[in-house]
Image 1 (cartoon, rainbow over the protein chains, first blue to last red):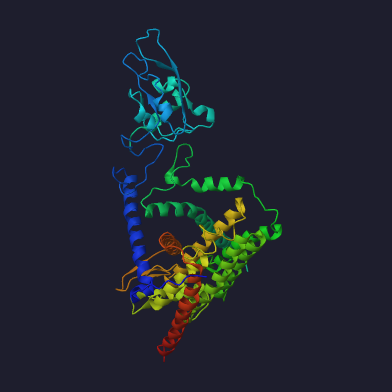
Image 2 (cartoon, chains in turn brown, purple):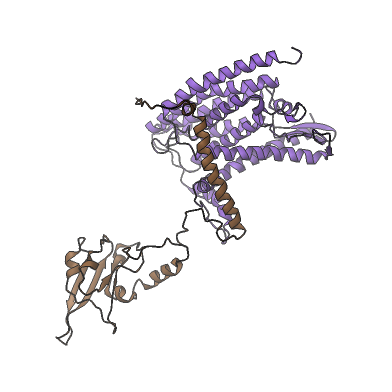
Length: 186
Length: 364
């Protein structure tokens, strides 16, 4: 049973046709403007498609903010050793329990600890960025700009220390390829 | 009847088949692309063949390959025979309705003239009307055969809507038939070639402006597309073809697009002079000022067919524009509009036309 809604409409709106024509005029206007742009674009005009909002995703990307949280990376000292001191702050604060650290010690006992293993399970990560906030050494950041972390196998989403540090290792090739196709041409 | 007659008729049928099926195949791409252009998007532009994209024109081929290789699944609870029959009925009725649409004037071959029309029926207009009515069976049989409550709901909506609008569909066109004094479509188009006051083509829209608007509404309702797509209702009930997949679904889809093409062709035929080019007679242009340009017969025929195609394509574009602009009516609104607004207005239009046509008839 339809509910009867009483709206006060002026006679012009009651006829309905005028409003339909008004709507058609707007959409037809957009059509004409965009079609003009597309045709100009076919002949090589640079801003021919300026009115369209589409970003042709795999070839072009929408620029993301500097603060946007993307895939993690571990930072290194100048000599290439990890900044991480295995303090377990990130592992403790992680609400998804996706970080796993095994601490190790340098032979020189005056130097702080280092992570023997540092794993992030991206299948569990909720991208909250608490690990970055918690880190006292600025050793972990989420600023790689990599958003596409999908894999065919769950086991491939365990990101190991080597990869997080240098971007080398198991996933290096794929991510490199992704980055190349990405580019920042828009 | 000689053999050229059959060859010309077969060629006509071939042209209509190629025109309707070709356009229906392309409309799947046009619909995506036009909606994109209207909404400031780019739309389907992938599906490259050897790196050649051609603004996405290969998408219909990709669609065809996909639907031909897809499993044709008949649900175990469905009636197999009727399930097969429904898409056939839908496509057959709508293609049959095309057979009376004239797409050009006469063509002269070997001293004889042939109509550029598959069947020059004396009851052309009634034939279209009959085929549109039979099209309801495609919808109903699909809904009943699917044995699915959403399918049945869509079929019932479709049946009620099509029957409601068929009445107005006939009544709006009766005004035109009355003014041109014929039910034959080629007669109606030929009558539109004469001039009012020596300079204005006697097109249907000038004689029946209200009839045109009403016919536009009923034609969209008959094609069951937005804003009258309650039988389908994409976001709520999927409609009468909910249990169809693969090529059978594509046949429904094609018949919907051919219905759009037919609606556009009928608008052009009844209200915009069909294949008539303004001031173009059988032997060339005769402008109001007295200037004439003589043209060979083949060129005149070509111009007429081109004019018909262009007018049809324009109205397909227009119907697409309507489809991508207006939101869907609620089902009770569809019924109220059909029975309470369009039908009385169509009757009033017909009565007024009849009275005026009698009062200002030649020799009154």
